[in-house]
View 1 (tube, one colour):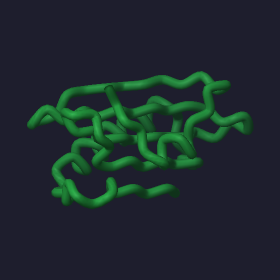
View 2: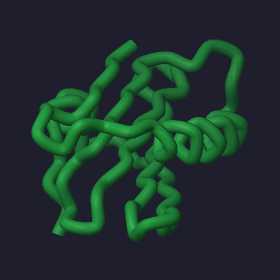
View 3: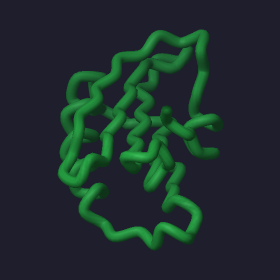
Length: 100
């Protein structure tokens, strides 16, 4: 079971439809990507890396991806997520998070 962090819950909006992509990464970590259009038509993006145990390692959320379609944002996020998964994070620290 995934334990979502503060970045996900700040980004989440169950009233908006989204597309998602998940994949298993080396070492059993999971990549979770979600992309959607805001009420004003902005492309919004969430990237999460979760340990095998379900704990959040890294979460990033983007309120706007100017000039990107949801399809292009999803492709960019997959590449970004794989890069983030290679970053060593101290397991005793809070998950590395970034909101932009």
